[in-house]
Image (cartoon, rainbow, N blue to C red; front, side):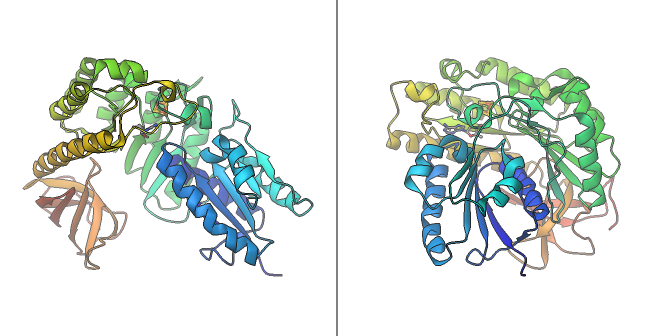
Length: 444
Ligand code: 5AD
Ligand code: SF4
């Protein structure tokens, strides 16, 4: 008999990418093999995201396309996983009766049993219980190959920012034991990965009886073969001296911090429940730069939060002006039913949100270019990651700060960390050439 196949498509954050690897592992253990051929697959999964309305719309449209596949092949299983499964199970059950399986982010362990039971029943199989304990620490993800490996260290979020659906779709914070994380990373090194990114909705709230986030960071940085270590996303409130000390102590911890600002006005920050003021955020930036002068800073910003006035938006621009982030993810506020902010009045019009977003993007692109131009004429440590999209004769790699650099191939290979002299900065990308003049280089 032919081996059964599954197809999986992932939307949203890196945690979903990681979870899709866990699901892949479980499907393989159930005897399935992965396919890219959607129409021929025996099971199709969409791992979904609810963070903004647009993310949900994309998945709804995709699911509508699957209806005709199911008509052609009624035995095909269609599964919705992740945040939308958690959040919208009733809507999905009602509007999309061809969806067979609905599993929330804490229910993947039940997948093999559910797949087996499916042959006995044609009922919908739904499991969206959130767990206080599920950390999947014994289930390692099925990775293919590459240089970057993502490692989930904690799940869930207890911060309850008023705009955010995550605490509802992913439940309470829980951290994975240090030993289990270390053994996954050691396996990753054996499989050829060189860069590791510790992952969590609130990565630096990590806390176990064996230590908090800085202790974990310190332990992971000591593992032989971990050439680069990153983490995302921290909350500014949980950045402390100990974390910055550990970062400055280890050369393999990249000098980069993603520090979500969200807004620059104190009144809006309070309404968002971010628990810091703009002055506290700016002081933190100063402190980070004292510990790690070359630290790249990236951020997330929301424009058009309910009640945000023009002057309050200008305060966001002013913080962006002062900090000079290396890059930013910028979003229009999207109301998420069930969150506290969705009940606030004074919602901002779509046109106004769009206008603010464009003004913010203009300013930030300018800042990115200013930051990138500072590299011109200098030598950067670059991890060779993939062939450049522009030419087969060029590589793309990232600096420690996370900026992409394009340069001509010589004798290096993917996974090498090399010195590149930066010649130019255009858009959000750096351009350079390999050099042997620097310090601290590895010959490929
Ligand atoms: N609307 C717009 N952006 C949001 N984010 C989270 N929730 C919303 C929302 N309701 C953004 C925040 C967060 C990033 C992952 O997504 O900036 O840091
Ligand atoms: Fe959402 Fe805030 Fe938690 Fe981040 S810290 S996941 S923005 S609630």
